[in-house]
Amino acid sequence: MTHLPGRIAWIAIAPVKSMALVFLERAELTLDGIPGDRAFAWIDDSGRLVNGKRAGWLATIQADHDPVAASLSIRFQDGSVADGAVELGEPVQALFSRHPRPARLVVGPWSAAMSARTGLDLRLVALEAGDGADRGPSATLVSSAALGELAAVGGEADPLDRRRFRMTFGVEGIPAYEEDRWIGRDVRIGAAIVGVAGNVGRCAVTTHDPDTGRPTFDTLRYLDQTRGHLPSTEPLPFGVWTEVIAPGAVAVGDPVALVDAAGGEAS
Image (cartoon, rainbow, N blue to C red; front, top):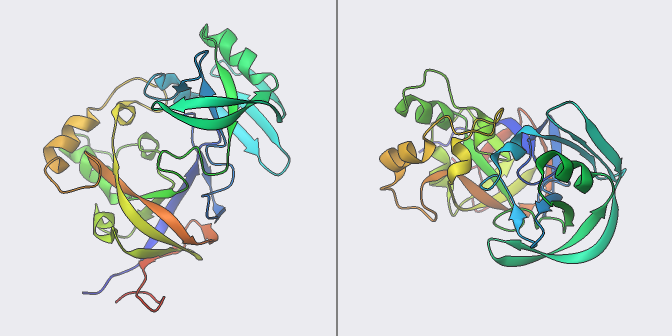
C-alpha cells in the first residue's frame, strides 16, 4: 500500500490554556512541544484549573505571548488589554483533574483584570515547559477532511471550525481519520519526527462555538454515532496525540508522511 504524504494545513498554539488559539505559519517543535504553547493557565481560589469545560468563554479571549521577550498581552472581548512583562511569583500547586501540577503565580495586571471582568477570584499561573498539555509534552494532529465529514453527519454544509478541536497540527491531503491508522507508527512532520501514541478523546468543549463560547453543535452525539463503536485509546476519538522523537522546524505546507524503520518515508 502506498502512503501518499499529506501537508500541514495549520499550526496552532494556545499561550494560555483554554483561551483563544493563535495560528502560526512556522514553529520549532521541541521535545516539550512548541515553545509557548499552554505556557500559562488560570486557577481559582482553591487552586483548581479553570478551563473550557468550566468556562467556555475563555476561548473568546485573545492572548499574545513572546517567550523570548517574556511579555504577555491579553485582549478581552470589550477591546481592553492587559499587558506587561512576565514576572514569576511564588510557587503553587495547581490541580488539573485532581492531579497537582507545579506552577508559579504570575505577577502583573492579568489576574486582577480577569477577576474584575468575571467576578471570579482567578489567578494566572505559569507552567513548566510541556506541562500544560493534557497528556504531558506532546503535539496533536487531525486530518482536515475529518472536519467536513463530522459536520456532514450533523447536517452542516460547511466543515466544522478547526478551533473547536484545539489541535496543534491539521493535515490536508489525506482521507478523513487516516491518522487513526498511524497509531503506533512514526510520522515525519516537516523536519521533525513524532511517534503517534493514541487517540484524543473528546469532551463538551468541542460543542462550543469558538466565537461565543456557547454550545452550537452536538459534537459528542455525532462522534458517538459514527465513532463510538471503534476501538480507541480514549472514548469519542477525534484526532491523535503524539510524542516528539526528533525535534525540528515545521511550517504550513510542509509534508507529513509515515516513516519506515530506516527513517525514510514509508511506501
